[in-house]
Image (cartoon, rainbow, N blue to C red; front, side, top):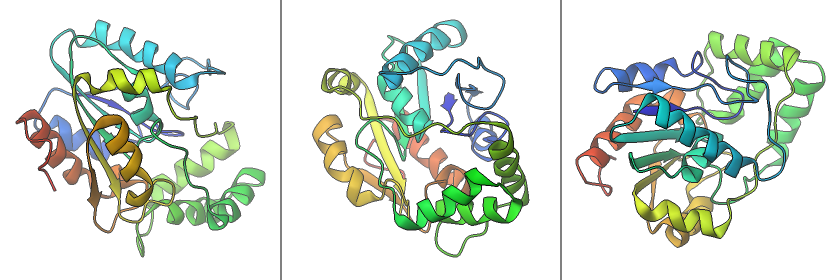
Amino acid sequence: MVVVPGTNFNAATSLPLVTALAARWPTYVVDVPGQPGLSSAERPGRHRLVWYGQWLQEVLDEISPGPTVVVGHSLGGGIALACDVPQLTGRVLVSPAGLTRLKVTGRVLAATLPWLARPTEARSATLLRQLHGAGRQPSAELVAWMNLLARSCRSSLAPAPLPEVTLARSRRVANVVATGEHDVFLPPSRLASPASRHLGVGVKTVPDAGHLVVEEHPEMIVMLVAALMNGNTNGGL
């Protein structure tokens, strides 16, 4: 099992999901180049997801030469889609980039711009509430992380969808696509058509979850992985 986190997240901030997966399978989690963490500071420019896909191919060749399932969240989902190596046996794509452009609402912009301009813990919490399911409160650890991140790093923008030829290759293995019921960027209605058109799969909806479904409901991701590994891409939720 290899986990690829999303924008502004890394191995250290993915512990709820990684811990749940590691209880059942050998699990690695990678820090993405150009994102805050222990990887390279290099951030690709044009064709970002294609570049990242090649990077992940090299990573898998080094750490996981045998059958591998990749769990990718948000940016990590797009990276997983762009990766094509023989040992890759399946992908669980959670609120994945790469299939379509993200939806950005006025409420998200109203929470993001003050957080970027002058970050405080209160502003970090306000932004995180937009990324959670309705009524959910972010953890103190996550609030502290987002505040530190805005003070120390330059957040990257969402990537463009992957080229058609790359998406066509991604159908070589089984893919599961899931998103939170209240995902502000990639709600089920926005992912349904591109997931069906490009991957030939439906979208599984995680109830009461937002964009940070991997933080809110890691046990649901474990269920999706278990179903995929049992050959049942229609099960799990």
